[in-house]
Length: 387
Image 1: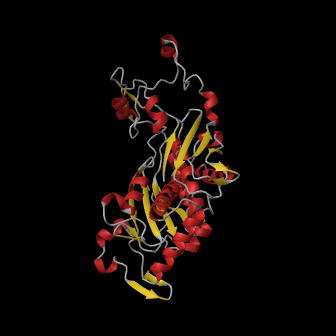
Image 2: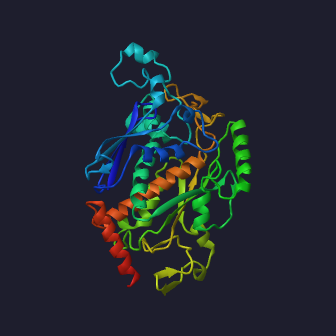
């Protein structure tokens, strides 16, 4: 399975093409839209989320609610595009109109792709960079992940996400799968410990008042993935490597780890490796410090992915920049932005992981149609149980 996205932040729509889904998967636009709605929530979001009411339309690859096995095309229309018709128009414009056009950006924002993207593609109006490098593109990735979550649910594989920290307020708790499943949307910062939620909101409010932004850490948990997804035989088939690449490619994400993650640097090996046991249910581990992955493969334990999001680089007290036309120092341009998007980012991360798990499943098992895929996985689970 693979996918391709297209579209700009203030363009008419985002477009997604997904290739490689099995036939016979139940799929509706409403089911995907429910996941997009989660991405738009969370404390600290900006005015864009009041404008956009993201809904998905399925344009191909589905008939009467079932996938056909052919490429699935999804679109998410940008409601804000009607305010940008002249600025983001497709047709050529006169030189005089181009010179008078508002919102030409020549002052790159620190922390964004603006300056380097302008250098790479020789754009003198940096809007040509920021329109595509914007986190708006993650709406398309959530749509892909939503399809993948629907597929995985048919195979009894579930995925959940939560916020572990925002602006230094950290949830140090250890939670069961049932606690994560039941409480991951219980408050608007997506923290399991409700007692910490107001402290996180207070930090976000203080940052917003100061014209600043906050980052944090999120966690994604995958339950009941069959053992053996991924491979140890070559670097680009290791599932933890694929997940890490997918997660770190999300806008503003700067770190990723599995299980105990960077804590393992300070732990002895006897406290890091997960001892193996066997009973009537098959093999399992006495702990899950490694986060469900050994040798680049799933080992049957829950997959635990931790990721760090930096503070959003668009600030309402902008940092110094340089005008690419005059080469003079200026305050960087300000685009509409969030003061904190960590709760929403946990949703994006969840769906990025869902894609990689679904891709690994479809690579491992014959999957031309859903019944075939289900039979293959059921047989595999029984084989490894008796191994």
